[in-house]
Image (tube, rainbow, N blue to C red; front, side, top):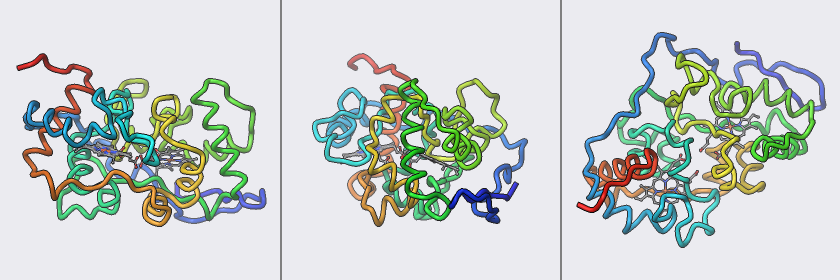
Length: 262
Ligand code: HEC
Ligand code: HEC
């Protein structure tokens, strides 16, 4: 379906091809797997405790000593949301930095089975006031106290649910693909669209950031609005070291199974 509702002035207008049609990928495509990478856990731990901890925290909870100075705040690796992220994507983020991954400036390195997909811009189709109301409404999903707001609910269903899921759990048809509903899944687009039910994730974002994100989209929010804090480490770490840190993050935080001292 390529139709797109235009909400400005309250009139329903159609905008063609605003977002790429979902379901363009073959339905039978194999679901991507969060496979174990070849990295060295202990090497990764060393690097994590030297570089990454300052923002992401020694416990992987996104609350390192300098976590308050970034917007959005650092990723929370212990959140269940992280299970939807692939090792390939994590590797690319660390090597090239988030903005370059989203722009696919990754020197030929392609994400296996998934596609880098930035959160799109809605400034053309939504009024500022509608965006502000949407943010309030979405925060209601997180707190469990959903406010009644028909307009936001309708906009969400039409414009956001294909990625964020009908209930805001981040399990829409684009990230989920052919993987069964209700089960844990690995997102077919990376980063996985946000799951609004995860409080520890939504606390990373203030309203000003979310407003810029929805109005301008992830690319402009990162470049022009300068919400760009996950930089590249490819110039200080080689691939072996990066795979190590990916393995450490996967095992110790995402899977929640830190190893005992060697
Ligand atoms: C200066 C603070 C800082 C440091 C140091 C840092 N990060 Fe991050 N990282 C961030 C922030 C902020 C985000 C959230 C970025 C966003 O959502 O735009 C993030 C996000 C991530 C993500 C998730 C990307 C996504 O799309 O959600 C991964 C994976 C990651 N960092 C890995 C690492 C690793 C591994 C290291 C160490 C080599 C590291 N980071 C060092 C601030 C930092
Ligand atoms: C094409 C898929 C797609 C659509 C459609 C979409 N989003 Fe997103 N959204 C994403 C992705 C991907 C992220 C994760 C962004 C990141 O971490 O860089 C995201 C993240 C978010 C976040 C959390 C902030 C963050 O940085 O993670 C909010 C809030 C949000 N979207 C709101 C919306 C709203 C409101 C709409 C509809 C008007 C919408 N999105 C439509 C893909 C989408």
